[in-house]
Structure formats: C-alpha cells, structure tokens
Image (tube, rainbow, N blue to C red; front, side, top):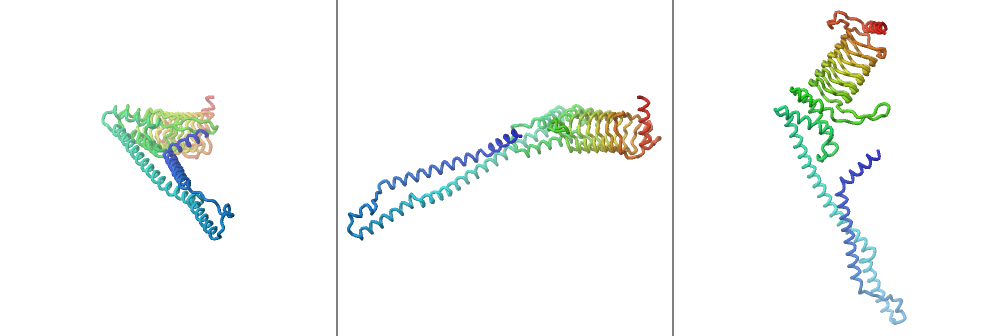
Length: 379
C-alpha cells in the first residue's frame, strides 16, 4: 500500500514538474524585482538628511521658521512613507501580484498547450503503431497473422512503456486488444494461427485474492464475447472467464482447469473431452451443450444449468452440484463419487438412454438413487 502511494506521488510530481518550474521562475522574478526596487529606493534617499526641529529648537527664534521646518519634515516623512514605508510595500505587493499573475498565467498556459500537443502527437503515434499490427492481423499470409497475434499478446502481457499514454487509455487499449483477439478466433481458419491466438488472448493477468486471503495470479478474460470461436485444444487454465459468452463455440478438449467460469454462457457449445477440474462454474449455463466425456472433477457447479445438455460419460467425482438443473439432460454413463454433492436439485426428467434418444426418461431423484446404489455396490 505504501509503495503504491509513493509511486502515485512520484507520478503526480513528474506530471506537474513543469508547473513547479514555472512557480520557481515566477518566485525568482518577484524576488529580483523586489531587490531592484529596494536598491533604487536606497539610492534615491542616500543624499537626503533632515534634522528634526526639536534638536534645533534653541537655535530658532522665529516661530514661523519652526512651523515651516516642521511642515517640510512632515512632507519628507510622507514622501518616505510613499516610497519606502507601508504604502511602498503595498504597491510593491500589488506589482508582484500583477506581474506574477500575468507571467505565471502565460507560462502555465503555454505549458498546458505544449503538453496537450505532445499528448496528441503521442496518441497519434500509438494509434498508428496499433493500426499497423491490426493490418498485419488481417493480412493474407498466415505467418503475418500469427506474428500479429503474438504482438497483441505481448501488449496484454507487457504493455509497451514507450507508449506514453495515461491509465484510462492503457485500459482501453488492453480491452480493445482482448476483444479483437476473441473476434479473430471466430473468423480465423488456419489452425496454426488459431493456436497462437488462443495463447495470446489469455496473457493479460491480474492478481486476485481467494477466501483465505492468498493472492494468486490469474488470466483476465471476464465478460468477453467468445461466440462461435474455434478454440479446440486451447489451454485456458487458471483464467477468469466470469460472464463470458461461449455461445456455439468449438471448445473440444479445452482445459479450463482451476478457471473461474461464474455465470459463463456455454449454450449450444461443443465441449467434448474438455477439462473443468477444480473450476468454479457457479450459475454457468450449459444448456443444449455437447459435454460428452467432460471432466468436472472437483468443479463447483452449484446452480449450473444442464438443461438438454449431453453429459454422457462425464466425470463429476467430487463436484458440487447443489441446485444444479438437469432438465432432460442426457446422463447415461455419468460418473459420480461419494464426495459428489447433490442437494436442492429440481426433480425434472433426465434421459438415461445409452444413445441419448429419449427412449429411457427417468425422474432425476430416481436416477440419482440408481447411481448411489451402483456406487455402493462397487465400494
């Protein structure tokens, strides 16, 4: 926390260092003006001497002369007050404020204009470099597309320091890059390029804290649109896909081991032989998805929706399935263990036929009783 505060203070100071320079220049200018004015005043008064009338009272015999001398002395005091006394300093302060405000305002205005121009030029150069990468991503040679995907992945993993942009612009570019990579996965056809894109899209990491307050590094792909992507064999373990949309996606043999998939949408997606070991799939939607031979071992699938889902021969050993919905799901050959948790599951019909043709429909509770009996016999 202290390091973050120190870093933030340093960054603020560096951003405003031109202002500090301007303030220093203004202060130096005001001091210089004050010294010059004071020196000139001393020079102007160096040859003025006056003897108070009280010291020559015995020598003066005419009252009128005493009056005239007192009058001249009073005028001299007034002049000194105007030029070296309180009025002089008030005028000098007014001069400082006027000159300092004018000069400082002009310099700060020029500084801001210069900074705005430089920021605009930096942004143009960043946009030009980014657009060049995007043009390579749409090039005809697969090698150029693969290289562009790798470059975009590096932007997510190590944002270029030479791109002098503020934090908001940096986050915008990172989000844009992830969305472009996700979209490319639904457009690209070359398998080698697709493999490269699947690696690049999950390279943006963030630090998360679990329930035990332990910090761990995790890929950040939350809320991305992966509709219709072709990502078979992708290794997407230990990544946050919360609220991501995988509608009609080809995710065969994808590894989601230890990933966060809370409220993820897998409707009508292909997930054959995918791995969800120890994944957090709370409230995930697998409706009408092809989940044959999927490994859900130790996965947290509480309140997940498996309506019309083909989960034949899938492994739910040690999985948490509290409140999960299996309405008309194809459940033949599903594997459970004594550690698998079922509770508050809606009592809907499931398809227990080997071919998944609906020829053997059974109520969920009855099917679960059969599975428990089979488990007891094998143990």
